[in-house]
Amino acid sequence: MSEEIKHECAVAMIRLTNAEMSATAGLAKITLLLEKQHNRGQDGAGLAALKFDAEPGMPAYKVVKSAAANPLADLLARTARITEGFDARAFLGHLRYATFGKGDESFCHPFIHAAARLRRTLMLAGNFNLTNTRELFDAYVKLGKHPTSGADGYVLTEWLASEMLHSEIDGVASRREQIIHALTSVLARADGAYTLCGLTGDGWSFAVRDEHGIRPGFYCVMDGAVAVASERPAIQAAFDCRTEDVRELEPGVAMLVSPTGEVTFERVRPEAEKRSCVFERIYFSRANDADIHRERKALGAALAKPILEAVDYDLDHTFFSYIPNSAQIAFQGLIESLWTEGLAEGRPVRFGQIAVKDAKFRTFIADAQARKEFYKHVYDVTYGLVRPNVDTLVVLDDSIVRGNTMKNAILPMLDRLKPRKIVVASSAPPICYPDCYGIDMSSLGELVAFRAMLRLRNYVAPTTPDELRAAYAACTQEQLSKAIADLLTPPDMHAEVQVIFQTMDGLHASCPDTTGDWYFSGNYPTPGGERVLGMALANYLARRDGRSY
Image 1 (cartoon, one colour):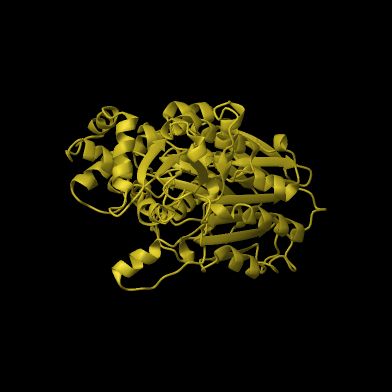
Image 2 (image 1 turned 90 degrees about the horizontal axis):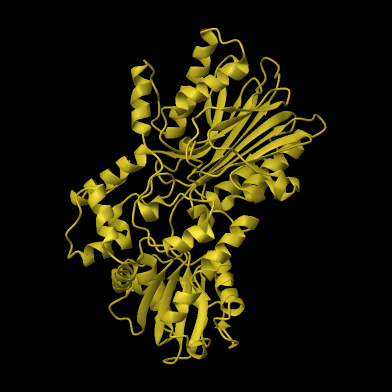
């Protein structure tokens, strides 16, 4: 994805079940789980360590959080000695992308409900986004509670702790049943996406996903430990286990680990259609997951024929590349398809890395025009690969969301190479609808596909979600792509610009087991998603800025 967009988070949990594995080893493992998921959160980090059977007067747990400029590095530097003299048996870690809320440590996970009785102490961290946080907050207040924060993680933590206490008071004898009751009761009220991990002060651990499996979650039960993480390869790296040993958390089913290490599963949400977020496959998750690697290559391969049609099959005068680096795997699939499917018909395919993002590029120029000129140099371009005024340049991107970086930085940078034509290909379909499950794109007016649709309708905006869907359905993908290309083309551009998008059929064929495509289709998995779409449209019509939930 060539533009910055905040998304998702990462969660990690380790429960040591064998006394032979030291607390220091456990800390090293949780550190590695976080390191291997650093792509999922760079605004905040947190880590909790829990000791069983702590002596009165001594801490049962330790928590460190950071919202520094490099929070993970800062966190790990501060936790290096957390296990000295502290025999922690469970660890809970989190990396945060602040799609909403402040960036200070108070919004970093894990959230802690502290109590004098350890069985009533709860630590919670999650990769989640709820559409009805305000309603949950108000309902909690109506119970006579006084929450001190409106953060969704805080509200969930407090409510879960409260329900555990109530079930204890009501005579639910089994500790396991108390936790199951709390999860069942509270999550029934939550609308949205979540993968939650929790530790109780008396040694219980749990992990649970929403019933649609929107957010990812994986676990591995092995000799000596139980591990949970947002991405499968992180667990494989930390514990050197096989792919088949790491399983996906079943949506709506809570995994519980008792203080003695017994692992059990209990359904806490009704069965529902699985709608896992397909953007995990396109972009968010790291491609060292074998399944995601194959799917991204398939996404690139699906674009081979329409790209060749766009360049009139003239490979002698076409150069292929990709932007940004995250599109590299899809690009491999594209190039391989040109060869293996015979589309290139034995002719050489010219390709290479045409641009690299300058990660350290900064500008503090106040003058707007000068700053715009500097913005064109966010990427370092490779000169001499594209023949001026002769070649067509094809660049593959993961997706195009708002299009600002494409218009203001990438296309002007590519135009300096003087290609005859630039074809921008997206491995994802056009993003037509807002997201409310963890991706930072809840405003309709920011989406370039929405603006292009309005242009095709002579700027007559739909007034209801159904009218919006009908408006998109009235446009062919070719018409929408042409309108998007017109919007993305800078006024001083010399090269012709064409934009090609993945089709929905190509997306589903490439990622057959992942159907969460609401940002492309408008088909939301929860009632809250439909409400957010309505609010996003109302905000646009009223010229209101800000989130739609």
